[in-house]
Amino acid sequence: MSTESNESSNKLGLIFASVLLRLWLGVRALQTGIEKFAGIKMSEEGAKIDGQVYDPDLTVEASSKAYSMANYHGVPEALKGKFEAEPLMMGWALNIYDKVLGPALILLGLTILLGIASRVSLLILGLVYISLTWGLILINQDGGIAWLGVHMALIAMALNWANYNPLRILKKW
Amino acid sequence: MNRREFLSKSSTIAGAGLVLGAPSVLGAAGSANDKINVALIGMGKQGRVLFEAMSNIPGIHFQAVCDIWDYNLNSGAGKVRALQKHMPNRYTDIDELLEKEKGLDVAIVATPDFWHSPHTVKCLDAGLHVYCEKMMSNTIDGARAMVHAMERNKKLCQIGHQRRSNPRYRYTLDHLINNNKICGTIVNINGQWNRAVSSSQDIQYKKSLAIDPARLKQYGFKDMHQFMNWRFYRDLSGGPISDLGAHQIDVFNWFLGCQPKSVFASGGNDFFKTREHFDNVMAIFEYDSAQGPVRAFYQVLTTTSSGGGFYESFMGTEGTIKTSEMASGSAIYRESSAPLWDDLVKRGYLRKKAAPAPAKKSDGIASYASAAPEEFAIPGVLNKQPHQNHLENFFAAVRGEAKLNCDARHAFESEAPIFWVNPSALQKEPIIFTPEQLQV
Image (cartoon, rainbow over all chains, first blue to last red):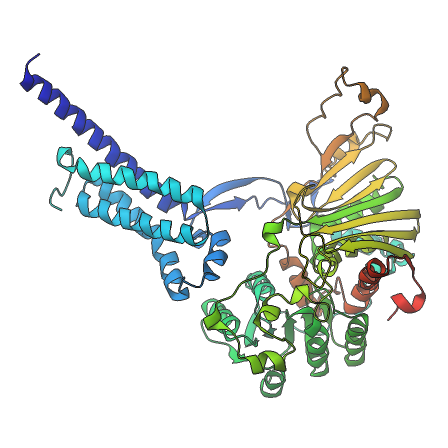
């Protein structure tokens, strides 16, 4: 096999790797953002005893997942209280972060998936993950920090392979 | 038969010795169309829980908010503004609030326990109806003063034992224990609230948000740590047996319809050595109930979550009902020798769960054990926040449409034995109750 053929095969592999990694990071960000609008919808059907509803507030034990604006929670409630007690965490900043995190992840997920300014989008996603890492350091969540570290490595790889990514809407930036 | 029909038909049963189950104070007159003007007294963690629950109840106008901590006051007022689109009036002092605010109907008191009685009495004397968090007070005399103020002013005073309005608990008592007697004779009760060390730590605060020391002193706190962690101090609260245990010991007394005749308790600072209150407490109550003698064991542990969290278990000759505010912690078990419950399942009174695994023949001890009981569940879950029904009952009573499910007098009868748990543990002696110890 010639050197030219080897280089061509290798380039094809890099293109596939770059596309797959971009898709993975895009889906990861997009769905994580969407999940921040998810909640549990309980059944509203009253439990019946002797054929009659006993109390409208006593409903059959059934629930389903539902998405709505009302369900939105940027920072999980269980963690929010811990962050609020941290002396280095500013309350106003936490409130802003709570509001923008979900929409930001959705927006970045879409731009990375569609290939709109991929490098800048990946850079901003990396900064979001750094901010999450800082928060988790404050509250001693070492497992989460390691998990975000893996994401950062993937972003670095995606940036490194950005040139091998032909399926992009806006290639500049 | 639905709940309302059951309640009307069973009034004679309730009158037969179930003193604790039938509040005597009637609802106030009012109109369903009138907005009820509310003052929120205390906007800490529990105040916010109650506000969230009330935000789903129509016809409420949050007119004023009071908290001595600016952080709680401003964040609480912000939540009110987000809900009703305008800012409530803000106060750090309840006396100023009661003096300046006109047209108030109701006060919701969610301050630290040692302020419950003074604040509730002030509000009742000012002509307001009051919903006050449990425990009524850190002292039995404080609780007595609340009952006197309610009756003196002929106003409503609901105490926040929210399980009393929970349809799952009411269904369990009305239909399963009283009507169908599925426990047979209740001979023992076992209850617990076990909380992990990680969930029992001191509450922290930002130094930059600390309250001025003079203001802290004015309201009975020696410093900011005590303000944040008042539950650890004997002069300010009753400790874990009161904070956590009161909910469940109230259910013991409510379900049995009587007060215990004695308590014997043990407690200690097993892990949190410097706290004034015991971190682990165990208590045994003895009852002479209408159906016979009952012993009840209760433990509150703030050092481990082991053993299934929190529940109350009513153990009878034919079945056991394990209740919990969390549906996942509830269960009903039929003794193998009890009559079958198939008809109750068919009619919807019970939901049968998977059959228990048979004992292994190789397990030698199995031959000495009773057959595994069948497991059932009540046929529904609560589709609301746990405090909402109790607040709805209160506001319905304010409108004259309902009776309170837990007025101050009935709450006192149920809480009175709890005040004697810590003294029994401190003295390491049982306390045989006298009427003076349990009566208003």
